[in-house]
Length: 455
Image (cartoon, rainbow, N blue to C red; front, top):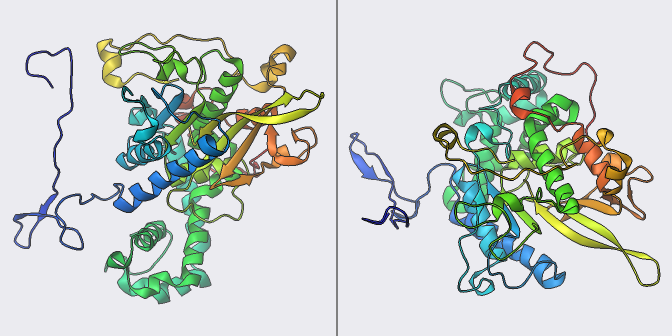
């Protein structure tokens, strides 16, 4: 902050060191495995390895969308054609930053490049991850599916195998390994995966890396955390429905070109919203920093995660929007029109609402958030000729409902028509996420009849 002119602000650059308790309860500086005192991470923060892999992800995106396809420009003067968003967790924001710098390093940004806009939400409004802390109904549902998993697996031969392997390292007050032990089995899995990613200095005893044991842990973890999305429409709605609705909304907004693709949130000079600072009127690319539970939750809700393992570090989903273009000989080709990188309207923060500091965001009449069955024939026609492809870690995924004749590009079932993609997403996009989170507490937690995902 400047000392006298309070109309402008700047950043204070500072160096962080972590303090902890010594043997006699005295304060001491925390150190890394090789005696490092600077750059030591807190639990849950992005590590140097994480920065390296997310930067590499951005470089791969640049190679594909800039160098190979020419879809995005080689040099940008601002980032207002790009919708950037991250969850409140620091590692998500840092992952987004690294990926963006990988895609547009310093040589690909002009000398006058202004700070890019990154959208964030208050924790109570966050839909970029399954928000069981602030969505009470989702917390209730997820606890029920977790308990069902514990009831199914705790007394099995597979769990006995795990106990023979690693129970001797469990804490004294929870000696038996179980889905709901302390630590939980999914927490043990997180620790195993983290140590595998970071080399020998962080390794656990060798039994934790037994291949059969890891397969058992992964299978149970995926069931505990994601089976609800596969079986319950309400679970999908309050878990990731708001996010998927946002993705569809921005795609349809790109088709309509009415600002609901995100440009009204990203663009504008300081304290203003609207078109981009370089005159941009459309969003071409969106990238959001989220979490493994986001990715698997979205994929399972679309019916494309069957048989998959827990998402590895630096996993990503790409939602790509294509348009069929007419060729000179009367035929057609399919061209990429927009790419939304998982995941992405924007609510004002609590304090801004209380103090009346929120800017007026222009509202637009759009078909994006209206269910497909409510659209007039002329409105549906706007979606004709557009296709959506979902890629998970660079693998095209096929949504079950898109396999049916007429629901995909001829010859490739992974290219779902935008109309069908929206129809499938609409079924679990809540009209009011906050209200849905505070509803149905007296209703069954697990459906009596399985409500299949992806249709």
